[in-house]
Length: 320
Image 1: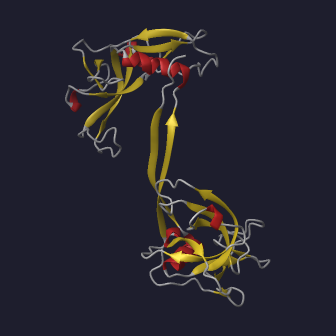
Image 2: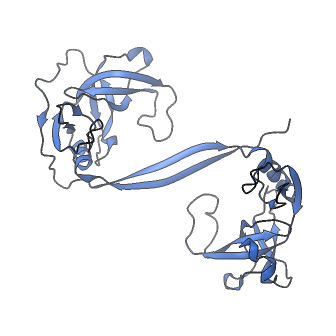
């Protein structure tokens, strides 16, 4: 059985959103060590507060201040914290129903081990030493010291007004995953490592897909016939990149550079590739190019001009 190709991939970007009056008050309150909930029309208190009643869809405005103590309603032990999680040491994910609230808040509980965690455990907020108006202003929860009394009375109304309110939130979104290319693309990648470029031909329409997809998206039939294409091809269209990429794969490239659609000889559609070895302003549709592998690379680093005459437009117009 051949080795299965895998590669670690990361999708990462900052996500910025405006908060609106309810979440703005909630996050600004955390910055000021104040926990706010919101009361629904039937009297329930939601923490974190919602802008609309999740049961009725009614708009909500009645902010209330709840206690910073509560009770664990359920939990799960996290023995191996990952990058960006609230604590660097093993901790428990807990749902905490703050005193005066009717819903539970998800956060981390700092505990010496799973034996120290249980449903019904009384806990309190541990505030972050530096607070910015984010859920991370609650560094975590911690068990209440013995003898800690619950707060007296229900949540009290709050106008949600603070000095210098937080109005937007920028959160880094990151997804780490392992990619497995599958049968068709795996064979294509193995061929690239041997400095060959292969595709698969559809048995119905005879189109050659490069990279292969394992099936023809037009005819909806499996593609198994291996076809070697190129390695030379024709630039069908291109763009000049003037903004330097931030990801590790392109970080070493100086701008400007050209990224192009290239129709390899024998292929039924164009693939993406970087054009080098020619000034950006001399790249053109119809330019004949060939792949360039760097030492030890599994795939072409870029494409360069072959010196052949440009291809006639009619030879690639169907591949634009």
